[in-house]
Structures are given as structure tokens and as C-alpha cells.
Length: 142
Image (cartoon, rainbow, N blue to C red; front, side):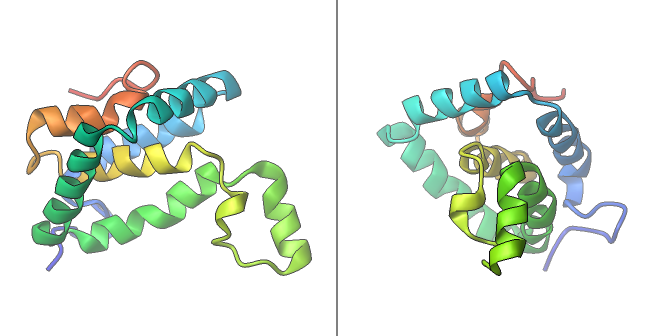
């Protein structure tokens, strides 16, 4: 069961926050994207972060918001695909989901978006940790 309620709220109760994030992600320049990737790299292998990711996955599965999670894929892929890779993929017939075609910001963006999706169900410190690489560039909406 999903809590999304149709096209007006494709991301369930977090729709406004998810859209806020996606719009601002689209506006990040190269330096900001690189900063996010560096921040993510500095924390993603820490035990605390790995535990937060595990809790995020468990919470998402229990939440019934998998339809909302799946709805994130298209918009996120459009924003994180490397500009020159879209042409190469279509020219070479490579699959659209080729991970090599994605900007390194894809992984931290997915973690942040999924954390927003279930922020009402996660402990606040876990949501903050998963969102942390973006905190200075895209402050979380109140």
C-alpha cells in the first residue's frame, strides 16, 4: 500500500519537500555538486552512516511508500545523468540505466531524497545524517 495519492502527491506526504529538493538540485552548479560529492565521500563509509542507510531501507519498506520511492527514479535520473552521456547512450544503444552515465551526486541525492520521503518515520538524527551532504547547499525546508 502506498501513501501517494495520485499525480498531485506522487511522493506521498513528503511531496512538497521532495519537489523542493529536486528543483534546487537541478540548480546546483558544478562546484556545488562537487562539494556535495566530497562531503558524501567523507561520511558514506562510516559505520554510523551505513547504519542510517540500513534503517532507511527498512523504514521505507515498512512504510508502504515504495510507489513514491519508485516515482523518484525518473526525475532523479534526469537530474544526475551526465550531459554528454545521454547522447552517447542513445548513439551507442547503451541502456539508460548505465551507472557510468550518472554524475557521482546520484548516490547522495538518492539517499537524501529517500530520507525526505520517510522523514516523518525516521529519527531526526538519521534523517539529518543522510541529508548532511546537501545541508549547506540545499537547506531542508521547515
